Image 1: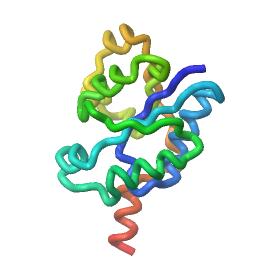
Image 2 (image 1 turned 45 degrees about the horizontal axis):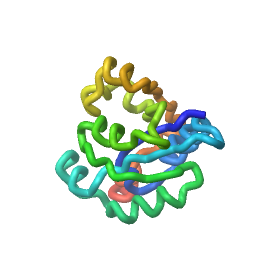
Image 3 (image 1 turned 90 degrees about the vertical axis):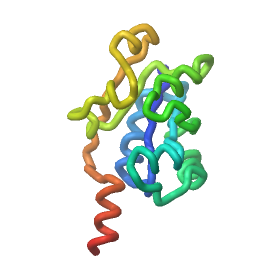
Image 4 (image 1 turned 30 degrees about the horizontal axis):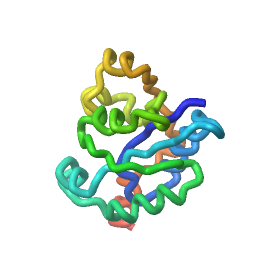
Amino acid sequence: MPNVYTGGTFDLFHEGHIELLQACKRIAGPDGIVTVALNTDEFIERFKGKAPIQTFRERKIMLEACRYVDQVIANIGEEDSKRTIESMYGSSAPDVIAIGSDWAGRDYYAQMGFTKDWLDKKRLVLIYIDRRTGMSTTKIKDKLKNG
């Protein structure tokens, strides 16, 4: 079975996150590994212009407790996810990069520093996971702010 890589902030852990991780585990199967590359607090603050609600440590603990996640690593590459992925080569090297369908309309390749050639050289498949719930951390924050 394939090893699956996904990444993100995972702030205010919610059903949309579970939906993504559950799909990653289905793809990986019982013998595959699901790795989550978790964005650091410093990167989030620089990239989004504000700190996450939960710290890296808090977010990592929640992800590690999720039954659909086998390992959590820090996203050391920040915008350039190639660096984080390349650091994994060995027994847990990914075969599949899975991302939420909310990225389908954006330039994920540019965001992550990928090229088609790089993915092909690494024998990586990029797939989009359908986000049916539409839940997001932004929606939760808006709900808290606006009642």
